[in-house]
Image (cartoon, rainbow, N blue to C red; front, side, top):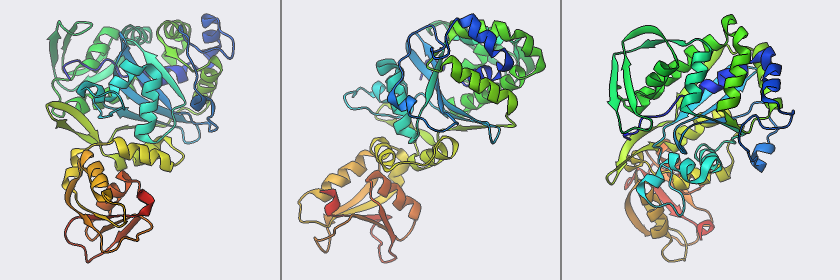
Length: 406
């Protein structure tokens, strides 16, 4: 985690949506037809992107520096509720992928560096159980140019920020004083990249970035920026990579002008930092994460999504849950098999044995203490039946594997 996070990409949402009546200038400056992507690079649309039927689209924002991604957000604008929802995904989020076994490859930012934007989109969709409709990628230079074009952003810097790192790419030199001030592009980049003075590390910096974003949206939607629309259009065309079409941006812009957002809801993917071996990760609390994502971006979670997330999500939080696993079938070794799955996700398996009968048709999860703990275990194994049994006492949660798990 030596490398500083690159940029707060949610700023692009405010820019793209606030172009408003000047969006047609944007058309002409880009010299694109209605159905062409607004980007200087070829963008490939997937079937997932084309299949969206809802008006509220979920957009993945990515910070790119020489093919590496260190800042990841999902954002959506609800014109009916006049709200912007934004969810930050820490770059060190634990996300193992088949065939990628090195410790560094088990972080979600590696999905972008190794599999590009399609790999990251798939990772975010699987992690959150939602659909990503489009993406936007921005560079350092693009971020600075945008801030300079709108005349800077007023920010309340919480403490003196001073840091130098000649090894960073590009080299990082930060020198900002505490207090309210208007930051130009270079200073704004220093602010969103700074991370060393926050008591809660990366999470503190993400909170600061989100506050920066709110100030940015306030500035970019102010009357003073209207005259700068043509310059903004040119800046966007030079620095954005996106699969949003000009038609998409027009729709967003007009909706944004007619239904100016009254609130901005920001959140960070629920979880906690921890170690697996010698490597640090951000471990997601799968149930809370999927609930938050569903409320902010989803139309409900599919069972496939729940299963996928459960299978990939290790968390030290799970170690606080003791589990007993029993085989309720005639197939030998099933209890050990599913106990190993739970162990791999961090659960504390305290007992593996045969059940009192071997004719359980469906697997069941029982608890006498905490239904939330039982639900975590049930989701991890994709078991639908969760029951309360006050007679159980050997573990927080008891699992009986049935014939549906052969």
